[in-house]
Image: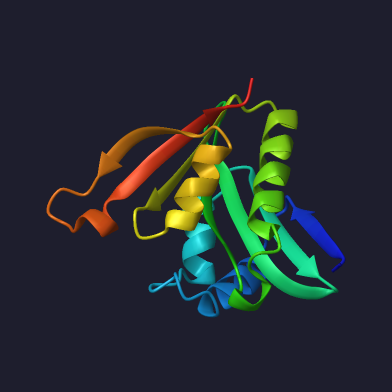
Length: 153
């Protein structure tokens, strides 16, 4: 059994953004990784949470979200490096993010995914996220964005 640890960062800095951007480079699903600068620009002054998942003290994945509006937390980016998949890390980070968001007083957690990511879509549905919208007229079915949300109260 591997020892795992999830580090929660709530003061999102340039160094944190650079670490998340670096991780994205090694996650194949991110065909267009987001730069550290773009992360900081998008989040701005909003409250944010960066989760870093470690396996045996090696960085294995991340999850980044921020306050979209009062009461609403948006889970924006996240992933697990291929060598560390099937260990339940994404599920652990999801639960950690939900717990934190609930403790901060958020009543709604939102996320977007695509049909081309069936493992993520399945995990979200199994964790009681509900499909709220599908976007992507004019793109392939696999590339359409699926918006999901979960009430935290």
